[in-house]
Figure 1 (cartoon, one colour):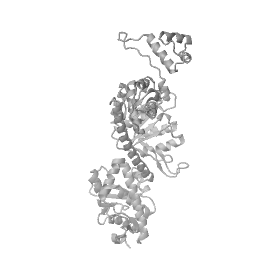
Figure 2 (cartoon, one colour):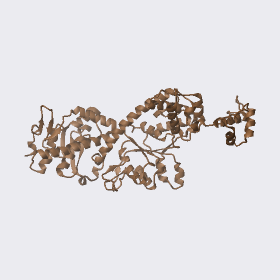
Figure 3 (spheres, one colour):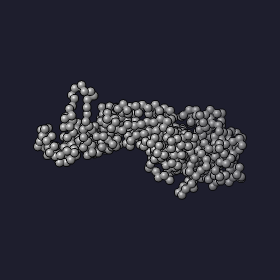
Figure 4 (tube, helix red, strand yellow):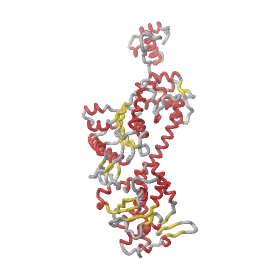
Length: 548
């Protein structure tokens, strides 16, 4: 039998009672082309063109490989050349394309010319003209079919495409060694791990969409609870001038593809600012992937960042892309970058300079298109001076630095933040919206917040969990917050009305320490560093002589 003798009516069988279709003996289904086009658009909109291409290429490859296996079980062709030609004919019989009359197959020197492609047609319909070939499923199908027939990996690349305005599509197929360097930009879309990464990114995209909706809802609740005071982009509260300057700089740098270094104490919101840079950038539709450099053991960190080849080390049972490749087209957030070991610092520097990575166990580099945002709570300049961090990497990361002030230096943000975080915690716990009592608010402002916004968030969550009504009292706050002493304050100038004397400040402080010790004069005197008799005398002056 020859490939030209294939007849779709002989390959396709239908069970009229159960509605079951079989093609070359294998179970099959009919799919509407417009539905496939809509699926394509949804994939591109959700996970980006690179990830969508990987999914559709691998889908096509699996389809082509299975078609070849099914055809082998059903058909008897005369030669290897006939089997190769049968692939194009089966592809055409399935309604996916129309080959040019008398044309050759993809493995021929001139390649295979296609006059009509359902995939190019649907891309034009739903997404318009493309800048590059778009028949990803068809290229994958041809690759899978020929790989099965030839018994080795064959890669089919589309060189011309109706979807970008060419007069026809042209597919060329060769083995990897025959393609050489020309295959490198296409190879990642055929690799099995790329499909895994794409599916993971699709799940992450859905998760990000869900988180964005939740964040917006929480921000609205927080703004209402705070009287809409100071709520900035990304749900970041910025009433203080210092934080407003940071957010303005973040918005400006987001528009260019520069590397950003976000610094600040632990808990100041570095990751949230990093996400703001991504969300405000042209890369917002592509993935944002984050990795904590301090949370991964040193032997595994290089593999997590740059990937590895099969057999590179014990347990490396297959090729695996690193997070640099997985974040293609988007943003990579390197948290705790100051914890990177020296060996990984060298490779990170090279990746940033050359925009390419080399997997562990490989001797070739792969181009990557990713924007890096690094974050650290270390003083990297001091780490450079101490020889623990590379000077050249430091300056490569610090193209633009966003330094976040600690919460104790942005007192204006404490209460708006607390109210927004209260609303978010109440929504998560499905409890009524709570508000702060004057006493609780006073304690929040007094406390220095060494743990910054993260500590404030935990305190508000605790308060919502313990509150008996709709109002947060001082007793609902953590003990260390309740114990905060008033900070001595002075007017801006000596002539300002209401100047407080030194005696007034001393009285307020002594009474606060006494209250913190439950009225116990012995403990209060010890904490103040004075004798009990001195304390008793002062209390008597304040009209508190009977205090205990």
